[in-house]
Image (cartoon, rainbow, N blue to C red; front, side, top):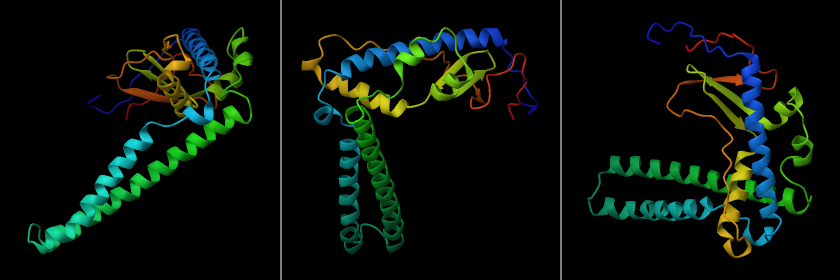
Length: 215
């Protein structure tokens, strides 16, 4: 939008509710399918975030580069200014890597405790499975955001995506205990190339013929 004027992202309420209902149904089916697989797995043994070893390897490489900087300076491979700059960048990168590793470890333990100790699932499958139609509470509990693009493409972003991603990855790596293939349920209608506008779902669904500004 070259003139930076408001563009209408209009969609009928009935159409939106129908689309979101269908997406939520697929999401519940995905959870039910994944839960049945996770029940046959040793949570304590297999619930591991595969990104953590990758981040740790990257951290080790960065630490090695940092430790070699002083030698490069002594051998005039780099200048004093370059040494200070590289050192600063490596330290900042290490800090971010430590934060990412710590965050993923906490998320891993949280997910493990929720599934194993509480003997429950991320969401109440039976509760939402038996809904005849979506209501405001179910939308708030399950959905983080809804995006509507200019071509009326609807993209639903659910809560708990990180936990579910971790659990799904666990079922893929534990092949001996799972004979059936992983069935991925697509839970969004999405056009990645479209410019999308977020809609707050903690208040209400998008109103019919609503107008939002692209900015």
